[in-house]
Image 1: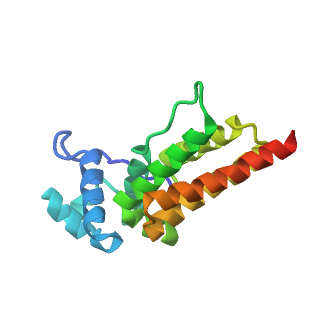
Image 2 (image 1 turned 135 degrees about the vertical axis):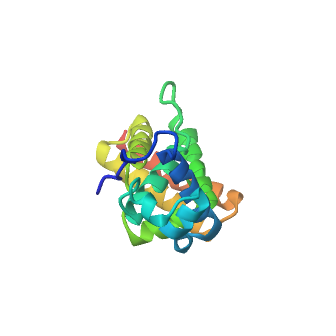
Length: 184
């Protein structure tokens, strides 16, 4: 993964901040998808030229990485103390599905290029920790975590109504619980 380029020096400190650029980029993405995000359009929204944006962000790809990581960072993660793994997995899957429905451009972007960053990594590690808290082996926990993510992404792609998502996810977790019971 290439690291997103942070805003560099060269402009007065109060002129423009990375958070402003990312918020404006996410707004453009939310309004019209990936095709709507151009450096010219973003510069216009921010009141600067597209060329001036390149002082702050190296490329459109880096901007997508920063936007995706910001969105992933806004996804709530349940606390691990006193954790009940099943409700935690349901909550994480629901949060992921909801985030993807709020930012559908992220689904499209993830099919084009990897958009992994620190916030996505933190989410995935947390999900794995929740799965391991159930008592699954590391290998089974990795597979369960990937199944939950895949299920949530599929539910977001299909815009599946919540009752069906809940039923499907509970069925998936029933399988995880059966696997745990078979080990004892």
